[in-house]
Length: 266
Image (cartoon, rainbow, N blue to C red; front, side, top):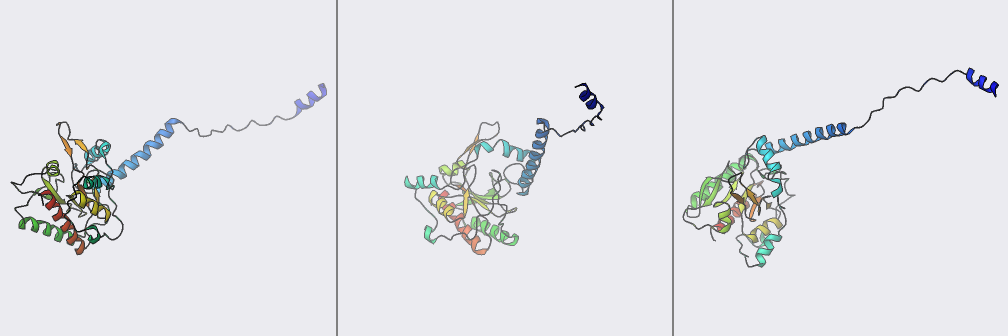
């Protein structure tokens, strides 16, 4: 036994294993990685917001932050026609557009609309510049020819466009009261899309034909800062996609005229 102990003791000792410094994942590192990712995503979202151009909310980081933080809880679904079907079944079946079977279906897929509640804008499928000017001319021409129905004035909802308002002396319906008498406006600075207020039956026709969607705040009651007042857009307040050719300009003008008829009592 002693001999075995001496033999083992005489053997050379093995080198110690190297001191490996393996990386250790900590909550701090995870938090740093998450923060960096969120910053990148927030910056991209902000750039998308700025790309719309001015409209509705301030065109700066404060406007973006307000839309993303304070308006988000009020965001509504934008494509269901159930709210209009209920109104129609309750007896509000007035329509100022052609029958659904005769209504022009929009060609192609729906355009991509930005994720922000305000301003509501398309990200593709814009009205070409020259055609957009012609569209605006027709919009202004109708107002000139119809002073008993509408007047042109700066939009109170869009802020950066002229809008149709009820002509002075006309009684405001409930939807018109909610929009402060505003009927329609064109987003002339970039995409050429339109916001209008349509009869419930016409909203359903437009949605079914692929021509539009609701504003994401339609039907919501949104506080206006600390004034105690609220913004309550009617559920009939909808976005009409930008016309892409002359035929579509003519069609969208008919939609705008249908909005005028609805808001002025037909």
